Length: 219
Image (tube, rainbow, N blue to C red; front, side, top):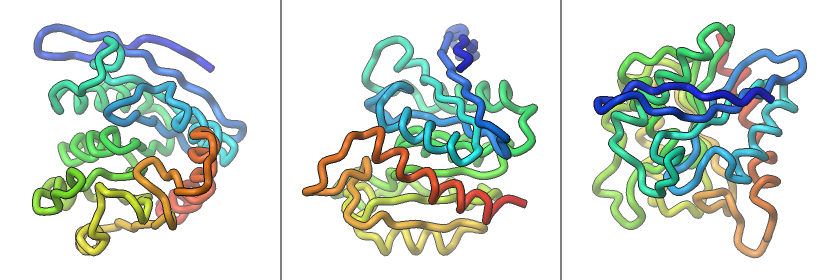
């Protein structure tokens, strides 16, 4: 594993973030992975998911957003997260196949960066937060049609951020090169009621599905 600092250009000065790059054997792709709003890059779910992806031949790069790096729990402005995504992708741009992936908030920020011309081969959303729980009248999807690369939505059927399911399904159906895969019984972090499992194991178990979908949608 290679751990280093990147400098993200922000309006009030550069902010340092940590990025951990881990190479897979015989890698066929690279995947930067962003954390959710209330967690950092070392959350067990992300560590397990990244390990699972490397077992599938995909190198990984977990990183912090500036607010998390600074020890804060609440996200900063979306523009800061978009700038972070751009910095990370620029750092990894030499990789032949680069897919952006994010858990919840991290995925939504990746989609906003991609809609604003960030260049990646595709996006993977682990629990895309379409709306606040109980507020489907305010979906966060207006920018998604501007994304021309494949978008892979991995969603739990019990996730309150995508209820009703039909709303997300209709949006995904309207997008170019987008698919949705439902994880039966999964909540927002893919936990299943009555089946207590470690978060790293839950994350790792998603990797084979994600790798298969990536291969299916790679040019």
